[in-house]
Amino acid sequence: MRRLAGLATTVFAITLPVACGGSSKPAARAPASGGVAASRLDLVVLLARGPMEGLLVPLACYDAKVATLWTGDGCLSRIPTGAAIGLLEVPVQARASAEHVALATCNRPEGMTSIQALSVAGDIDRGAVALWPAGAPVAQRASADPEWETSSAEDEALVGAVATLDASVQGEMIIQQALRSDLDGDGRPERLYVVAVDDDSADIPRRFSGVLIDWGQGPKVVLSRAATPGEEHAVRALADLDHDGRRELVIDERWNDGYDLGLWRVTEARALERMAGIDCDR
Image (tube, rainbow, N blue to C red; front, top):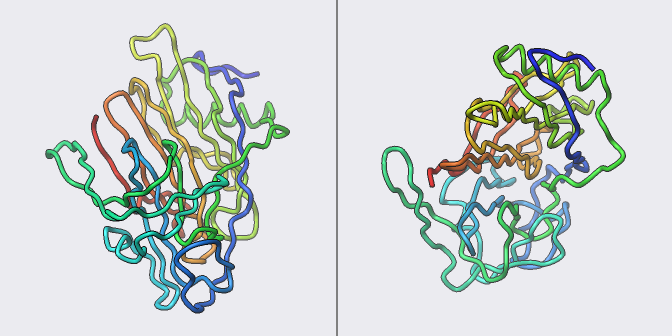
C-alpha cells in the first residue's frame, strides 16, 4: 500500500445506508401518531438529539402542499403535543411531552444563547435522529454492511485526497464510515467516506477528520477540520425531505471543546452546504 508523508490506511468501521425514498405528491395530512404511508405524507419534521438529555432539536421540515423546505423553530409548532416521534431504525418511539417546546442553552463564541427544542418522554440515545410523523419514509440511518471493505485502490485514493488538501498531514488513516448512496439524484450511487488521521507522535494526535465523496472521478474532501484535539465526524442519516433527488445529510461533528450537529445538503454543484443545526462550545 502506498505511503505518502507517513500516511497509512486501515479500515476501522464500515456502514451502508439503504436507499431513501418517499412520494413527492401532496396528500391528506398524516395522523399525529403511529406510522404513515408514503402516499399520505404531506408534512415531515426531521429532528436529532445533541448532548441535551430528553430534548430533540428540529433540523428541518418540509410541507408538500407548498413544496417548501425550511429550517428554524417554526417546525416545532407543527408537531401536536403527545404525537409519536419515530427514532430512525429503533423499534421504540418517544412522544412529545406535555411541555412540548423547551429551551436548551448553547455556548457560542458570541455568548450564551437559547435554542428551541422538543421535549419528549422516553429514552433517546445521543446521536439519535428522529422523524415526525413516525414512520415517514424520507430519511434513514446508516446501517452496517460488514461485507464491504475498501480496496487498495480506494485506500490509496483517500490518502491522495487528504494529502492534496494538506500535504503536512502525517499518521495513520482510519476509515470510520464508508457509505454508498445516490447523493446527487443522477441515478448512480456515489461513495462517501468519513476518515481520520491519527499521529501518536504529534502534540495533537488527531491530525485530520473529514468527509470525502467520490462523484466518479476519485474522492474529494468536502468537509474537514484539521489538527483539532478529539475531532470526530459521523454521518448519522441521509434524507430527501423535499423529494428533489439530492440528499440531505445529518452530520455530527465533535471536538474537545464543542460540537456541531448539522443538516447539510448536496447542492447542484456537488458540494455540501450547511442548512441548519447546533454549533456550540462546551
